[in-house]
Length: 171
Image (cartoon, rainbow, N blue to C red; front, side, top):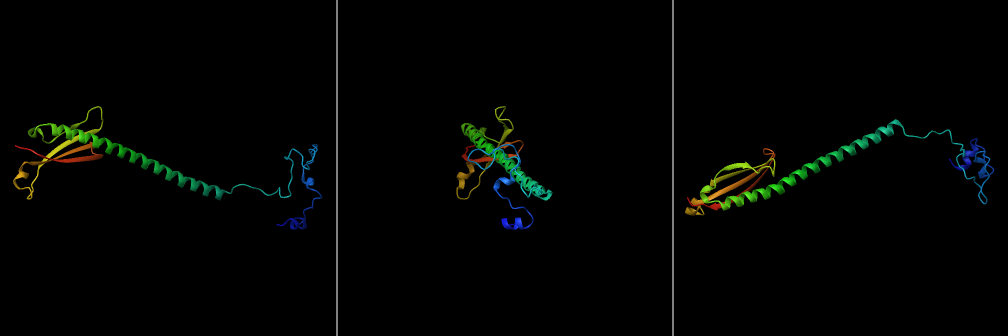
């Protein structure tokens, strides 16, 4: 409502701005037309109640729930990605280490085997498999070529990482 419409609707028009101030015994500070304490201000619209409706509160809670669920899922996904990244970083180093051990062994000693990495890397296991390679392009040289796979696993194959190498082995 415009200011003049309020007064036409039955509200008394104030003579001065100090008329709306509470009747306190405090005098205005020098040079000021308002008293220092403003707790006694009365407005004609004081009968209007303010606050949130139940519907507004429920909508706000629903929005908060959606946001919190999204944040929880994001956090959970971040943790699982961090665990996978940790595994693939560690597994590549362990597989390369095991492959270096196999390359240091004699050709006859390399065969299928499995084990774990001990207490230093709990939950990590390894397996080695060898297989003959046949190739028409290599001809007779392929008879001595072996494929060596080193597989590193975590928590009974929850995650797996495989490194493949080829080696000439004389029998």
